[in-house]
Length: 147
Length: 147
DNA sequence: TTCTTTGCAAAAACTTTGCAGGAGG
DNA sequence: CCTCCTGCAAAGTTTTTGCAAAGAA
Image 1 (cartoon, protein in one colour):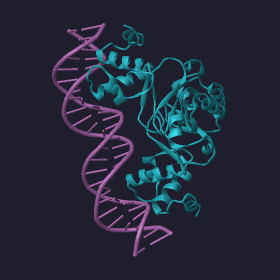
Image 2 (cartoon, helix red, strand yellow):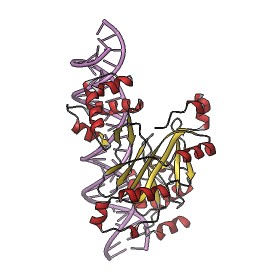
Image 3 (cartoon, each protein chain N blue to C red):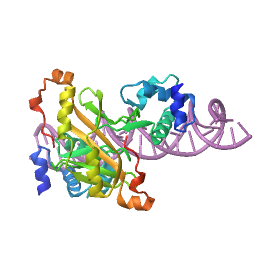
Image 4 (cartoon, rainbow over the protein chains, first blue to last red):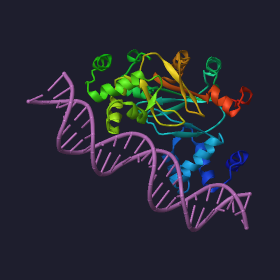
């Protein structure tokens, strides 16, 4: 089974809980909160197991972790090794995954101006999705000036 | 006093607690957690007051709010109306504020490809500051490939 | 067997809420 | 004077931890 292989590849001991969690993350097209993972997993599982397992996965770079501003619960997703970011609707909470990243040259600039070694970043975009715009009768004209 | 003026300008009723909180945020060069604000404020104040006040300030765009990945407690800072981002050292936790933003054209692209109206974003860069690099004997060569 | 992981229970950390008294305009 | 704000207490959420039993290699 490929899920087991993903774990072994990272040197993570294979257990049925870990397989179940990873399967959920692999099958999801969107990032999930810990409670959503608990609901989706195919065997009952304690939250402490989920926290511990997700920490382990994160340390081994098997998954990515994001803390959105609204709602501010951490979400987890499989690390497909394709760089991407989230576009989050502040009305309905829908998360869209967008591929690609405009930050590489910027990071190089910041590294040389600050002396840091940058190894990752977190970027989310927030706004209104098309259907919430319709529902709320918002048009592009009313967009707030970006600060 | 200019702190009172900032409040009045936004239509926020002036109280000694609000003045004290805003003063702390105005005087700080770095974003602060709610506990740090409580420690820095010049009169004893309940945490519920802090939560409520910071919510109010945030709704009126008087302050900015960020949720870093590590450590993941929300931080608050005065909204100077100059766009900036954070560079966070994952070893010592130090937060550097960096001015400028490389995202404006990118947001326009994403808007047209997704139909969203984007009104803000959150971006943080994570890495090692110069002194932690020295302390940990890390050099640029060992930098992880960015995923 | 030996070491790691899990579930349970409890605690810690963080955040929200209701209400009565106090402060601001 | 009227309304809104604050402190207190309590409860709700989210996350962490210790320990004994179960599971993986």
